[in-house]
Image 1 (cartoon, one colour):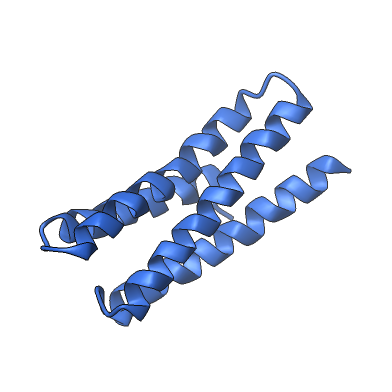
Image 2 (cartoon, rainbow, N blue to C red):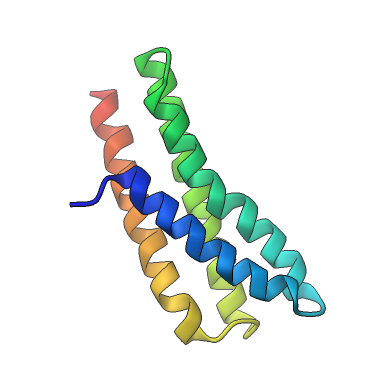
Length: 114
């Protein structure tokens, strides 16, 4: 099984590629792409910071932030799909991966609080 940090890194690379495409488009897609790249790359950055957490509370906090970023990323992907800015075929696997990442990080946060 792949480490969640590695999964988040690979996810961020995929998000970056989608955002490169969006950046070349006129209009609202470019604006949403800027939101998507911030949240989509922040997941992994916060997971990396959590590994160097100074305390258990810090570890939990950084993972909780990563979870929020994953939820936001999922939202932007849904919005891009619903507005037909990107085809469903291009977004579906990213949405599924965002959901999986949310579940994994959610489990990490929950088990760390116990």
